[in-house]
Amino acid sequence: MNRSTLRIDYTETVKEKLDREDSELIEMAFKAADKAYSPYSNFRVGAAIRLDNGMILQGNNQENASFPAGICAERAVIFYAHANFPESKIRAIAVTASPCGVCRQVLLESEKRAGAPIRMILANGNKIFIFNSVKDLLPFGFDSF
Ligand code: THU
Image (cartoon, rainbow, N blue to C red; front, side, top):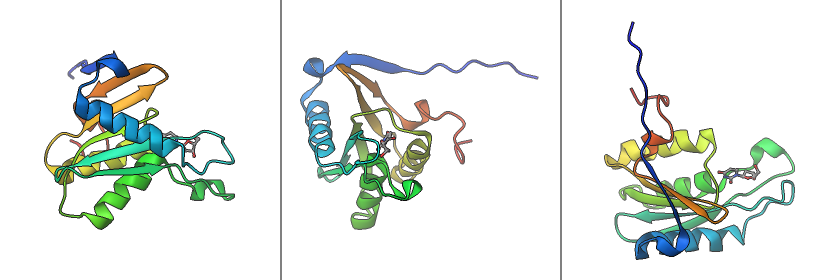
């Protein structure tokens, strides 16, 4: 029997201290949040993805009267990216919230497809949290062993 402890590396900062690329991506995520369709929760979430070809894609949560049919901002933009640019790798994602477990699982697969860590820039009020890999946010995720 082995007892282990996981260490999670992350950076806590504020928008004003972000470098140009991270700052641009989180701003795009906030802009995307403004266009969310969330009449049931009244909670707007935006996400923006940077691909390895330099493109930035945006998404937001899209709700439905049949609640489970709605989709989170992260999955909306991740699946759009894979559907339209299947050969491109996701390098970074910025989100105006902390991703739910399902989105973390989807991001884990995108990271696997990319073959390289995906940088995650997450906003929570005035605070920004940066993770260097999806694995840091979903240790022991399905298929990650
Ligand atoms: N939501 C997201 O879009 N992303 C997250 O990271 C957390 C939650 C959405 C789902 C739903 O439309 C609303 O926020 C309230 O849960």
